[in-house]
Length: 434
Ligand SMILES: Cc1cc2nc3c(=O)[nH]c(=O)nc-3n(C[C@H](O)[C@H](O)[C@H](O)COP(=O)(O)OP(=O)(O)OC[C@H]3O[C@@H](n4cnc5c(N)ncnc54)[C@H](O)[C@@H]3O)c2cc1C
Image (cartoon, rainbow, N blue to C red; front, side):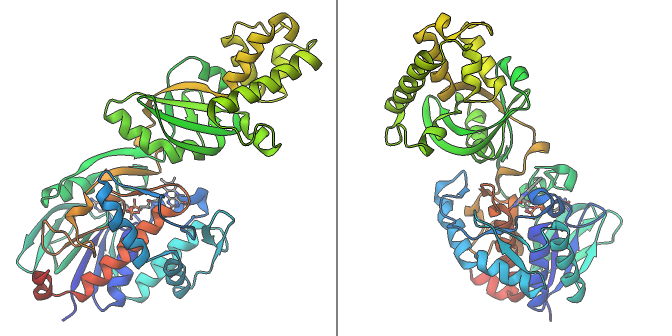
């Protein structure tokens, strides 16, 4: 007889699991507490859905337990980006790759990704119950019973928990999955917002709000540089944002949670000189000294008649120039000549090492993913729970998070498809042998 597979959560991992289980002969039901499935898929990639990434996966994922990284990368070798593209092509969706390896539907519409998933569920006879609130899960011998509001008891042979984390709860992932997993005997690594803006201390941000500037961000935890990213930095009235900030944010989130000091050093100008071969091969202090020397001499020699603010505005956004002048005690009408070499030097140095103290990540509502969740050591290689027989845990509910670029959806598809396939194929006897 076909396994009865019930999937809780009709998001990316849940729909992929449902399709894989149904393709492997299971009778599948998806229980979704929102009024429709896949709401978060519609929000991804700014409505275009960056559904995977063709670049090397190593170094793109995090887990609280470093030992779990091996399991993460093994999974992503077993089901990689090529298989994700093939999976969607089999469902009738063609994809294209961009320069950074990011893969999108050819039409660049997230809605088509959801359409093909729903249509495959229809074709395979998957039952989708929306507005379904799960009250309890009662594991029994060789399966179990789910009690859900508005429904009678639902019996399962295998149950896949695919509820996501608690980022962007407007799309349905409200953290209730952690509660369900905990009741089934799992530990939960404290979930924290990741891929998120960072709030910073200080009044300068009101003056800098709205600035978008190319640059480099270095994250310092307890004074030690932990990571560097380059790209478009966005300054807001409460702190910093933009892709490079998102990529570092989970490290900052966890460090702040562990009560460590978190600082960012923003460099708004050295990339200009990297491209012009000036000071290119120098590092750290030597590079700062080299750029400061060149730009200060240039100011004193050729632009002594300009105000310092005007001179700096030739290098960075006017708002940044104004803030840096103010922080160095230079009035907006003061010329390079009047300010003198040392103060001009200090301004330029500040443009390369603008220090901000990070106080908190922005809220879960603003985050794209969560870090933390169910430890990977509590599931086997097919994502079957080692704590509770007949249960699988997939997607963002697990303690694994990727950087921006399609890596989080890749994790959702891969874990969903591996678990769905196994849940359909496994019977109670083979399960016990594990
Ligand atoms: C704005 C935004 C943009 C993003 N862009 C990208 C991108 O371009 N590329 C990328 O790789 N990643 C992106 N992500 C991240 C990606 O969307 C997630 O990592 C991925 O959706 C996680 O899949 P999941 O199935 O684990 O969880 P979700 O997609 O969150 O799905 C969980 C589902 O379970 C349901 N649910 C939750 N609890 C219950 C319950 N108790 N009972 C019943 N149902 C329940 C929810 O309603 C939801 O439908 C983005 C995220 C956001 C917020």
